[in-house]
Structure formats: structure tokens, C-alpha cells
Length: 66
Length: 258
Image 1 (cartoon, rainbow over the protein chains, first blue to last red):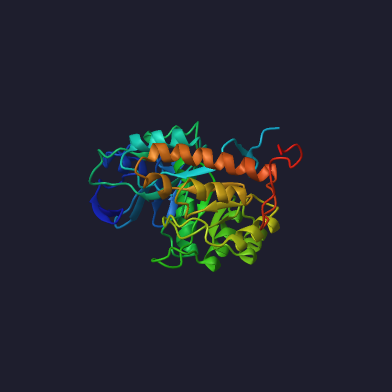
Image 2 (cartoon, rainbow over the protein chains, first blue to last red; image 1 turned 135 degrees about the horizontal axis):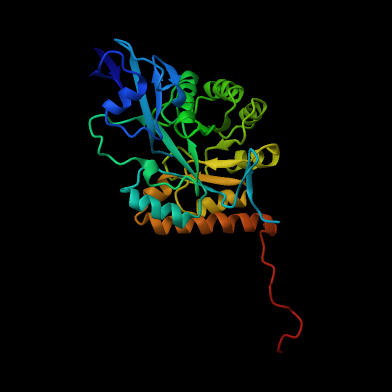
């Protein structure tokens, strides 16, 4: 199925949870924040929150800024 | 007693807060942070790069035990965007501090004080320690403090402009009138004397980024800013002499050889 991650269409396996998504994207799971359809998914919920077809996911981290 | 900066009960030995943007490399940034003596660093919240995953992450280079991280809401143009960004920032390091920016204009990056107040109220309600960047306006400062801001951070000049302090009168009035929370001068510092003057005015701290990151030698400029902030603070506390129009001799008149 397809979802939108950081504005890009992304294919993932049906039934994936947030931690599966992060793994499949090859991201280091520390020091990230995740929003699913504009709702923050706290780290403790990453293993239990299923991602559905068409969901919009934002994955952010810190970059240099003033 | 040590002359420390205390914000929301947290103590900082350095009164200099540094941004982490615009450095040519992480290595240069780390050395500049070190030379500045800072203990608090601002960062921005952005999407993870999914096409270039090999890219190093900022936090791989910053020792979060040594430096307190102050995420910002830069480039947010409404209270809603700023609140959303702050909520995300809180999750990254489980840290509820936020440098709140609600920008009102792209060319000047001047704050939208209305949106800023709205976002401050909401984020304080959500349990954040809010440090808002705002125009040097006493009435806005009072409203931000009423809304629960942990410090107020007036600009000295537009962000990244390096113009130094443009409105002495407003900042002096703010210094006299704002007694409830720390007053941090944020944005516009171009060189060491600007930082020293900000501190001589009585600011509790100074926040800067471009003035160091954009300097020819950022590490040396970071050291200069470190010294300037300390010198300015010391001068402020020492009680400067009044300004007079005419001379007053330093050497005695008596005993002059005739």
C-alpha cells in the first residue's frame, strides 16, 4: 500500500506499524519525532500504531538553526 | 555567589545562547560552540531527508549532556504552525523548552506579535517553557509575561542583519520595566561590541547565530563574543560613570612642578 511520508509517496507493507516504517526507511530511530495525520505519535506508541493506506506521515529531526 | 543566568529554574553559567545554523561544517560548529563558552544551543525542526539517509545528523555532533538544547519554531508564519512545530520538537529529545518564533514577514523576519501571544498562551498551557522572540515593545513584553513566557527575547535588529542594537531607548525601557523574567537580546548582533553593549544595557543574556557562523573565522569570533558578553555583564554590574560633556582631570592639580 502507499502512504505519504514527508510529502513523498512511499510504498510499505500492509499492516506495518510506525516502527516498521522507520526501519523500512532505513532511519536511525533515536532523536526523531513522528506525526501521523497531524497527530503526534509518541515513541511508546510506535510499536502499536498501524499505518493505513493514504496516511500522511511527517518524520522530523533537529537541524542547525538560530 | 556566582553570577548565573536562571531561566525557568535552570541555571546557566554562560549568558550567551548560540544558534547552530549556517556553519560550513559540523566540525567548525562544534569548535565555535566550545570557544563561545555557551551552555544553550538553538536548533530547528525539519523533515528527515529520506533521499540522502547517509547525511549526518546534527545531534550526532552536539553533546546534549553539556549543552541544553533549545529548539525553535523558525519559519512558522502562524500560531498553529508554531504550536505544531513545538509539539514535534518536544518529542525529539523529550525536552519542553521552545524558542518561539511566529514570523509575520519574509523580508524582515519581523515577528507577528499577535500570533506569538496566541502561541505562547497555548504552549504554556501545554507545559512548555516558552522563550518568545518579539519586537522590542514593552506592551508586548508584558502580555507575553502575563501569558507565562519564561523569558522575553527582543530583537536588536533584523535576524542575520548584523546591524547591532538599533533602538537603545526601547531596550533600556525594557530593561527597567521587565523584572519578572530574564531579558535576552536575540538577533541582529554583528560583532563583539554589539554583544558587549547589549550586556552593558543590562540584558540578562544574548542569543546569536549569524554573527559567529558567518564570520571569517567563526571560532575566533565565538571567543570574542564569549569575552564581550562577560565584559559587558561585568561593566553593567560595576556601575559605569555618568556621561559628562567636559573634561575632568585624572591627575592631581596639587604638587605640580612650577
